[in-house]
Image (cartoon, rainbow, N blue to C red):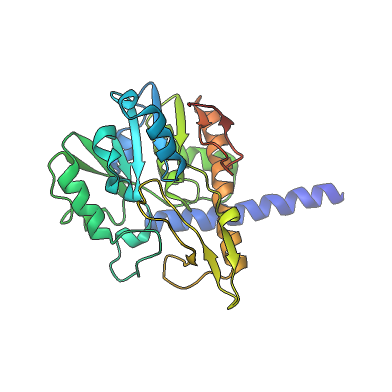
Length: 293
């Protein structure tokens, strides 16, 4: 009897979550996105590159020539690296609200958004898709003037509720796992584009090792990237709106991010896709490991 009641309550809770998520998706998602049009069109292996410092080590050891002709995705401020032109990514993904809302403050570890857009316009001399959330894509039309760059949209709405409904929404591009980190969006797009294998590089996600609380009770973090030329010092860790994180808030957001990778792994298996984490010493425990160097 108790088990039956528990199952009923669980089902009711999932129904409530599903209805709330569907309402939010109806409000924020767009029917026609480029990501949906590209669904199932790609083959082979896709290399999704995070911006962690291990990526520089890998590129220094192996060079960038082995990536020529490969499907490569880069994200955020990777265009500021000297390796960007050598790698020639096939697609580029932005997800952070700071790239689209000029009223949000600049966060530590990120460049001014206009520097990123200027670099994309100046450096990109090959055909590349630039992905951004569908509800803000119009803000990039005046900022991206390079004819080699095709602006592409995706729905960044998360879903919580029945798993069968979740998979259906993911397959049609109406929702995705919570994009707490841009790599969540990049991997999700690669899955839906039909890549049977995804290799993830530069994704240490080792912030737990690099954060602490200072004598003023501020959560500070060393957030270094592969394109940084100077040594990065610890700075107050801030949310997208510019307010400092409290420790429980930072840990909650990290928890959501790692949970999203678990959802990606489950979704990838349902699509016959294998995701390999090729990043040494990565904190991501959702994907199989592979050594590339």
